Structures are given as structure tokens and as C-alpha cells.
Image (cartoon, rainbow, N blue to C red; front, side):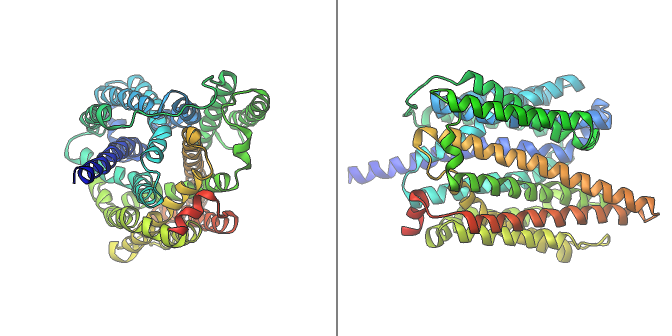
Length: 480
């Protein structure tokens, strides 16, 4: 009896530790989208111009995307628990600074620090999940919950941002992180596993780290400013070109160093690379859901921020049911290929439904069906994507693999949103020039964005189904 009690206590502690990890990661995911609904209030209060206001978002994305790979490798070397607690502490302090900000510069710098801390937490949270659960059934269930956080956190951010901005003020979208962060830190000290298997060499590839981080920073900076500066401008092309050159230099460094930041064999792992390509396309599609549909609801249908958040609630609930309850069972029954493809096709159908939503749209006929389809799609697909991205990776390299997949999602989301917003703006401008009605022109631009997002999701489904193959890791899910 005592042995059984200890076993139950051990399981409970692992799941409680996992809850703390997901709560910490949810804080990070929320902050990507929670700010969007509050931007008009921030602009008015701190007197931002339109171009300056973009940096409230871009400063976060820049450091988040730039430091993910380095953070993942540091987690492999120094321990995931240590990096997670460090990242949450820094994120909490940066959130407090954002909430107390009374100037443009102060808020922008604090957001950049938030992004850096977010990179640290995101890069090791998935690795901690892999450490906590080694049994295929338990890992599939945990990854389902983790997938819900990754997929649903963005739309939850829209809801929470609307509630806090309407009921209190924009400062609270940041201040709400402070008590949560403190609780996560205190619980992490007692619950997170201390065991850590370091790589054969604890030496950090400093040259490789500097080069790839600079490359990512250049690429993210070019992408987030592409619409404002022009995609064919000297700045955009120059920064993207510099990023490509730096990546080539990075590969040369990795080929020669004895302790590379990213071993070149990572680029030969078919499932890992396929999952990252799927992740880039899928993130672009998801961002069209979070941001473009939010704009449609606010600017076309006239929803308040709170009403926009509530409109996302059905999709979040459905996504939660599929991710946390059904996804693990589906993966254990069918493996990762079919659920991934079917989920992404459901998401594509949801975006296509949005692509025909009229100016005089109604929630029950034009919004709810899309939210339902996207909830089913995201809830089904994210678990297989994450499992594939972490397959065939040695335990002491899971931090790096996590950093890579998070970088893929980050870059895919930033690039996808930039492309979709650019296409929407171009379509709207052309229609306005031909004297179309303003709302009609705006909505037509959104339709184009949704259509391209649907293509992204459908292409990801095809690539995942055709290219992914059974491996030692993925076979275990089908065998149980």
C-alpha cells in the first residue's frame, strides 16, 4: 500500500510540475497576442505615432525570435530547470516594468527584455515536458495539453486582452503576469526536476551563437518592418541578405567546431526538419486567424475588444477539449501523420469559411463555424507537430530541438503575418483607388489574407502527410 501511495504521489507531483511549466509557457504565448487588443489605448495614453506603436509588438518579437536557439542550447548545457526559473524571473520583472511604463522608450525597452525572457522560457519548457514524461501514453497526453497552450494561448490572449482593457486599463495586460510569475517561480523551486544530463561537451559554441543570433535578429527585424519600409527596399533586402550570408557562415562554423551549437546531423533528421517546415506554414496560418479575424470582428462587424475576445471563446473551448482530452488518444491510435494532416485540413476549412464572410456578417453563420473548425483543427494538429519536431533527438539535445521548433513557429508567424497584412493592405488600397466602398475594400483585403492562410494550412497538411515517416520515436505512439 505504501508503495502504491508513493507511486501515486510521484505521478501527481510530475503532473503538478507539468502544470507549472505550462502555466509559465502560457504567460509567454499570451503576451504575443494580448497586446494587440490594447494597442489603441496604449497609443492614445503614451502618444505613439502609428510607426512607433508597431515597436510595442516588434521589440518583443525581435528578441523573442532572435534568442530562441541560443536559449535552447544554454538549457541543454546548464539545465532546463535553472534556465526556466531564470527566464520566468526576468519575464516577471519585465512585465512589471511594462505595466508601470509611462513613456514610449521605457515601454519599448521593457518589451524587448520581455521577449528575451520569453525566448528562454519557451526554449526549455518543451524540454522539461519531455524530461517529466517518458512513457508514450503520458507524453502524448502531456504534449496535447502543451499543444493547446501553444495553439490556444494566442486566441486566449485576444480574450484576456479585451477583458482587461475594457474592465481596467492597458497596464493590467502586463501587471497580471506579476502574481502569476511569482507563483510559478516559488512552485518551480519545489516541483521541477533537478536531474539533468549535460551534453558530452559543456563548452558553448560562442562564435556560432553570436553569428546565428545576429542572423535571426536581422531576419526578424527585416520581416516585422517589411510592410512599413517596403519588401523591395534597400533595408529589407539588405537585412535579409545579411541573414542569409550569416547563416552560411554559421554552417561553416558548425562543420568545423568540436562542440557545435547545432550539430549538422540535425539537418539530416527527416521528421525534425519536416515538422519545422510544417510549423512555419502552420504558424503563418494561425496568425491569420488570431490577428486578421480580430481585425474583421472589430473593424468590419464593429465588435468591442471584449466582444472580440468572447467570439474566440468557442474555438478555445473546442481546442482545449481536442488538445487535452482527445488528441493523445487519437495519436496513440493513428500515429502522428494522419491526425496532423486531418487537423490542418480542418483549420484550412475554417480559414476558407472566414474568406467568404460578408461585410454584414453574423456571428452564428459567419464567425462561429470558422471558430469551431479552427478549434478542431488546431486541437488535433499541434500535438503531432510537436511530437514530430522532438522525435529522434537525444535527451540532452531536447533543449536545442525545442529552440529550433519554437524558432520555426516564431519566424513562420512573424513572416506569415507580415505577408498576409501586406497582401490585405495592397488589395484594399487597389479597391479604394477604384472607388470601392471603404468597408468592402477592407473586407476584401481580409478575404485574401484568409485565403492565403488556408493555402498555408493545406500545404502544411500535404507536406506532413507525404514526407513524415515512422521513426523509433513515432512508432512507439502507434504501438501502444
